[in-house]
Image (cartoon, rainbow, N blue to C red; front, side, top):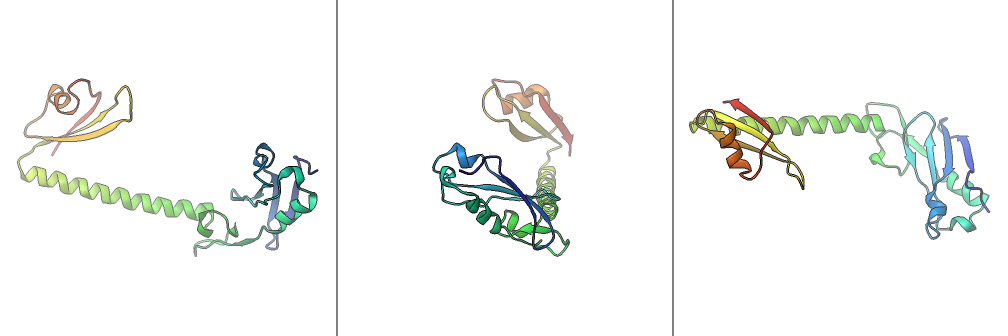
Length: 178
């Protein structure tokens, strides 16, 4: 029987140091099969090769076969020369490049949201509204809600609360002059 604490460290064909351990899923669930957690010692990327053979029937040879299935390739982006696992998560991009792509996407979405807000505010201003109230309502149960209301003249807290949540107070209110 294979030792649960079995660890193997080796250098990949690309010269990167790898470490394989048996995943707890292997023995926690009888029908799960042998699964390894393989990581690059120098990186945060991981891959989880798995066999159908139950852990109770797995051998050293099964462990080594799974380790042999692990291969590295270059990051799929043009901006770096990192290595990633073949068939791993992140569509072939390293964690750093993936974080950069996510950051760029989030910045674009934020910019789009700001532009929509500015357009909406300008439209309301042309209609004679002078103030906008941004309100966070935190109910006792359920998720927080965000509302915005436009007013012709500076609103009072009571007016805002009456519109948003007549039966509860909205503690987070910001009134903006348009």
